[in-house]
Length: 259
Image 1 (tube, one colour):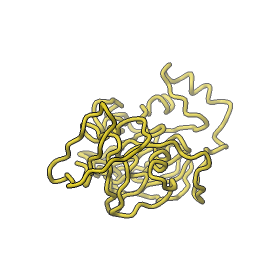
Image 2: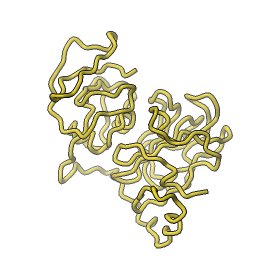
Image 3: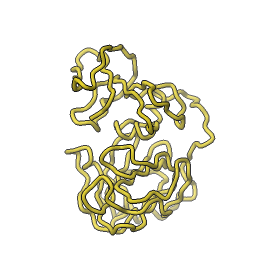
Image 4: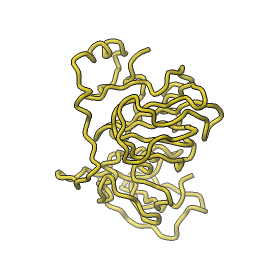
């Protein structure tokens, strides 16, 4: 259950969200925000413009991932730089806004790896289904070699991923080059989690690890070991592998090479 949510007034036609009594605030406030949708990661969804009070250990990317928001647009809605830290107790709006034409510069900005652009991915594209997702210049690989236990679906929050079998302690590898933007256990239900930002569009997530082998802001190449497979936050050793494109969950099987 989301903690410390303050319900705000919604645009005409939107229904209001009632938090449990323990989470309700005595005050409500109106927030004017440009947003494209209601975050859907919490059961029942959350109304547009809802405010969230930053908890100890929260990061911008962690909060954006939890509420299925595009990190860049979430940062823009709150007028903060994409890699800025979040101070516990700060109130942020769970919404998205169009980033400014000249975004705030950051020394840790990530660009799409140029070396991954090759002429041969046509072969991989033909091997995928007709509904394959265009991953742009990124070349994806499987993070672990195990069989798929549960496939992607939109029925539940944690089903919008692949659950991949594996042995405890097995290396978990980066599915593509990028930069680590989260490494911790602050997102309930995912155990020890790593988030990698690959470019301005794509983000990948690796959950239930027993051990994390990377730190925030660390650059990784495709195939680098980022964690050790485990069962934190779940019932058996397996990997929760999730892909987001502009904040939206994408079926990894439409991007990964067929095997």
